[in-house]
Each structure stands twice: as structure tokens, then as C-alpha cells.
Image (cartoon, rainbow over all chains, first blue to last red; front, side, top):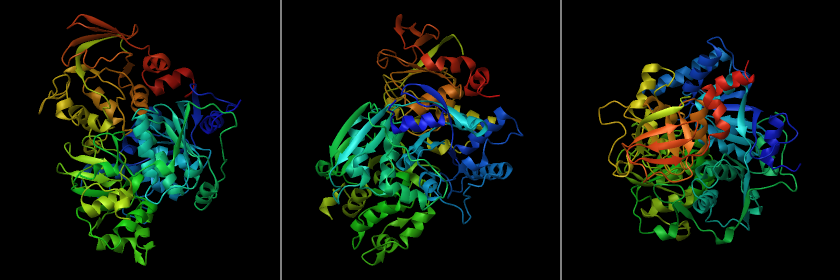
Length: 431
Length: 186
């Protein structure tokens, strides 16, 4: 029976020869990911249901990456990290990345592959909706709740409904003014914020396979903003290089069978796409950046699992080099590795950090920071009703802190170009 | 699972995301600690913009300023209810605030799964749009087994979609009880 990549991964995890979209199956979990916001609740559910002396099903398959509320004076946020510390000590969990130490990483979805925990063919569940980011590595990755994660901690398995797959093919070559963010915002604009609910979104075509692994992560990352269960990209040499550089754990590459059945297929010509923006207050409220040139801004924010990777800052630096920002501009590297790269990666002889500082940007610590608002002392948080262009993933009311704030989602190129002019700007105007 | 739920309805629109249901700055409360868990009920739906809070008029906060939650037992929404962040604090907050069921045209999948697997509330789907039909404060009654909603304020009745695959989990109570009964969990 011909299966999609997602069906094949779930069939193997369910110890079945084949599964079909629409079936409910119990699958064995390869990695469970959690963080400081959902970890404490998950741990509570685990002990409550399995008993105070319970042990996790496999301490090597649990990855805990605190990232949300790290650089804050909030007492409860700090207490929550202490709960994680106590848990990993009790359970002998090695894959823990403690804030305030050399091991601290930052945003879990970017740190997970950096640390070699994203591998083709596996099943990854995480207590965060952007867990789907890891589909870029050719695995089944999706977000779950605390109760489900508490269940997985004890049982090592979870029920899932096998999703149908929507395919999105990008043909042609990526123009220098476009980024993966433009592609995914374009798709979400087409199908809507519930256009892929309960389905897998597969990204394919020459245009996708020409992208580096970070850009592929951006595509899969925002699949959830169309309601998608998981995003997935077939592994190729780019994937294998990225995985093998980070882990020597064995894995199985899985691809679609010839003749597999898909829900639908959409084909895009990259030459016809334009720098794209999602206007407030929904990721599917699409416009071309050039149509919004009269929209004046108060702030630019470049960061998060979606737009705070090395590729994102290289793109922003191309625009900001030798220029000054006209509005407050916040640079938030996703991880400590990305922060390090700001001091080693160069554009035209200058490091990214030098370029950003000369442009007048503020550079923050590696974490989720203001992408989701957070405590009031969070770096870059909208504490007033400001209008912000952001490389993050959601622009719901109040998402970045203030209920009357306005967030425009865009690529790092568009955000940087807009930071220079103080209004929404198509990067072709400044490049 | 209760077979019958009667109480006041609270009506919202489309794409009610989990940041609106429980804003991120309250996520530092730990639901595993009872006195902190309560706080999710106090702040439930506090992120909904005023104009969209309690339709059709709006400006009817789910929990009155400085007051206690518990006025509403059934929440009515439009499309894509519970989209966005995977935070389970969202259905938990509605549960803590006394909500027993949500009736929406469609759900984001993580909210839907969390509602069922965590045993917080019953997520009913409605084939017809009830936003606009039902007003915040209406006296409504849900016959869970017959998947039927009666609006006692207007006398109208509505057929909802059958619960299907999730019914056995709702009947068991949550994913743990379900898996134990099915022998999946020893």
C-alpha cells in the first residue's frame, strides 16, 4: 500500500505495516520535548497519575529546554525553572539545558536540532505548538498539551489521528528579496488559519530543496499557523549533512511512496511571489509589503524560533549594513549559538553584531522573549499600544504584550528594510 | 461526563486563540498547585478584545472586573476555536471558570485534543453557525448523548455533530482513565 512520508513514519511508530489517513493509532514516541512554561504542569500530571515514585519511560528520550521566561525577575518564572531542575535530577534526564550555565541554549525549536535531537523518520512530540518546526528534518513532529505529555512521560506512547497530507510545491529559483517566511505567509494567506487543520503540510519542489536547513525550519514552523498538525520536508543531502553534523545516532530516512494519496497539491512559481506581510490580527491577513508602504511603525523585532536564526540575522544584516534604523529595533537571537554567530558571522568584513549596533539596534539574550509577550520586564515586549513589524509567528490581539498593540508579521529582510525607513518597506526598495 | 448541561451561554467569534483565552503572562502559574490553578479561572478569556467579548453586544467581560468566574457554563464560538499556542492552560482556564462545554464550528487540533485528553470540557462541533443565533446570557441546555442544544431563551433547538471518536475518552474521563480501561496503560 502506497503511503505518504507522514503515514510511513506513523506506521513504523505504531508497529504496523501500514496506516491510512483518518485512523487513530497509538505510536511509540522517540523524543518528548518540553520547556519552562509547560514542563511544570506536565511533571505535575505525570506524578499525579503514575505515582510519586514513578520513573519516566526512557530518560534519554526526554529533552527539556527552558526558553520562555528566562531573563525576568518574575519569582514564579524562576520557581518553574527550579521545578525542571529538581525533576531532571530525580529522573536522571541528561538532555537538560539549564539557564545560567554554559549549557543554556534558548528557544527549544532551534536548540533541539543544534543538539542533535531532530532526526529523520522519528516521532517527536513537544508541549509547544511550534514543535512542528522539526519536520524540516523529515520527521513527524507536532505539539501536544501537558496532560498528553504527562502521559507520554510514563507510557512512552500517545494516540494520534493519522493526517492527510497537503502538498505545497515551489518551482523556480528563490529571488534574493524573498525568504522562507514570505513563502509560508503566502500559503497561510491562501488557505487561511484553519486551512490545514488536522493535516500534514508537505513542502516540496526545487525551490524548497534549494533552501538551507534553517529556512526549511521556518516553513515547517508556521504550518501550525494554518492549523497544520505537522510540516514535513523529504530529507536530502542538506538534511543529512545538518543531522550528521550534530548526532551519530542512527536514523531511517523516509520518503513518500510512489502513488501515495494526497489531500491536495498547490504549485507556486517563486518568480511570481513578492515580499509578504500578515497584517493584524491574524497570520492569514495577507498583503504584499509594497501595498503597505504608508503604514508607519513604532518598532521592529527580529527574533524567535521563526525569525531568530543565523540565516535570519545574515539577511537582516545585508539590509542594515551601513544604515541607521529609524525606529526602535530589537535583535533577539533564538539560541546562545546564534548569539555567538552574531560575533563571528560577517557581512562585508563587519560582524553582524557590529552592523546591528552601528545601525542603532538593541541586542537581547537568547530566548523566546517578546514573541509571546511574557512578564512585563521581557526584552522587546509591547508594554504600550505600539505598531510593530516582527519576524515572529503570531499577531493575535495581545500576543506581544499589549492588547491594543498591532503586529505585522514579515521576513527578516522586510523587517530590516522597514526598520530603516520607519514604515513597512519592500526590501527591494533598499537592497 | 455529564449527560445534561444547562446554564448561561457566553458567545465569542472566529479564531479565538489561546493567547486570548489565557494571556501568556499568566502562564507562570503552575496548574499542579491548587491555589495557582484557581487563578487560570480568574483570568480566563481576559485576553479577548473588549469589542468581541460577549457577543453580540461585546464589552461583556467573561469574568467581571474584580469578580469571580462561574456565570457561564457553555461557550459558543465560530471557526477555528482555540488556535495558536498549545498551552493546555486554555481549556484548563475555561474549566476552572466553570465552563463544561464549548460549541464551535471548528477547532484548532491541539485545543481540541487538550480539552478531551485532559478531561476539561466537551468540545462540540456545530454544522451551523450559532454565533449570532445565540446571545451571551441566553439560558441554554445541552443534551450530550443526543448532541442537541436547546436555547430556552428563544425556544430554538439545534442539532450538533456527534462526538464520534472522542466519546469513549470523554466517557472515561481523560486519556489516563481511557488508556487504563483499554489496557493500553497497566
